[in-house]
Length: 389
Image (cartoon, rainbow, N blue to C red):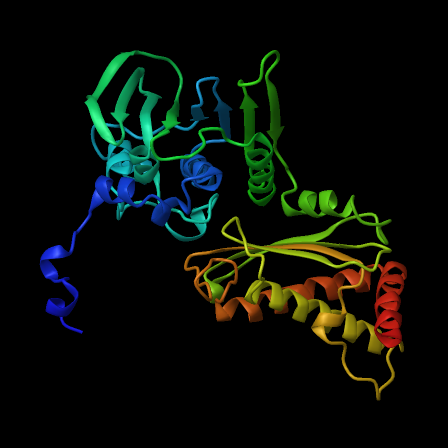
C-alpha cells in the first residue's frame, strides 16, 4: 500500500527521544499511567538503593510516603559524586543516572535487583516526576540536584557542610501523567518484604506519613534469607513434618550465577513453589523451578528405592508428582537473564535447569541420609500419595 494512497509518508513520522519520548508515551516505560505505573516509579528509585546493598556499599534503605503525595528514598551508602564520575564507586555519577536512559558503567548481572518488572532506571522516574531532588552526603559535604519534569532547575552544587554518608532521592509523581498520585501502602510493603527475603541481611523500611494521626511503618530484615521466606509461607499451610527449613546457597559458573533454595514439607496436600530471578518473581516458573522439581524427584526416588518404598518394577517418581505438602522458594541471581515470551514471568536460561537440579539432588540426598526417621516419613508420604493418585 503506497503512502500516496493512505495519506501517510515518511514526512509524517515523528521521532521522539529522551525525556520527551518518556513523557509522551509513559506506558511504554512504566506499564501504565495508573497505580501500577506509580508504583513502578517507586521501584526504580528503590532499586538503585538495593543495588548499592548488593554491591556492599550500604546496609539499609528507608522509604517514606510523604503527606504531599511524594516519596522519599534514603540509603546509608557513600553515594556517588554528583559532579563527576568517580571510578572508585563502581558506577556512574548520579547526574548521569538522572539524565540518561542508558549508562554503560551501571552494574549488571547478578548484582542488579529487579525490584520492579521494567528496570528502566532513574531517568524515567525523573522525567515522570513534577519535582525530584537528590541529595548526596559524603566527604563532609551535602550536594544537591533539583529537577522539574526531568529538566535541571539549577546545576548540581555543593550546598553546605554535612556529616555522615548517604543518598536521598525525593520525588513527586507528575499528576499531569498519572491518574492517581496515591501509592498503596500494602502493595509497596508486600514487595519490599519480598525483596528483603530475597536479599539476605538487607534492612528496608516503609513509613506512611499520609494518614491523619500517627504514621504507620514496617521494617523488614531477614538474616536467613529464603529460609525465612519459606518459614513465613509455610506458617499459612499445615503442621511441618520436620522442624527446620532445608536450605542451601551455591554458586555455579556453568550458569554464571548463584542459587538460593529453601524447602519444607508439611502435612497438607498443597504445593507452594515460588521462583525468582534476580529478585523478580517468575509466576510462570522456568528452568530454575523445573530444575528444582527434577532434583527433588531424583533424590526422593533414590531414597525410596534404597529403602524398599518403591519396587524394582515401579517407575521413577515424576517431577510434577513430588510436591505433596511442599513449600519452597527457588531464587537465582544470574549475570545474563533470558526470559521466554513477551513478559518476564518465565525464565529460559537452559544451563540453570541442570545446575539447580544437580545441586538440589545432592543436598537433599545428604539431608535424607542424615535424618533417616524424618526422611522415611516425608518420602513415604510422597510415595503413598503418588500410588493413591
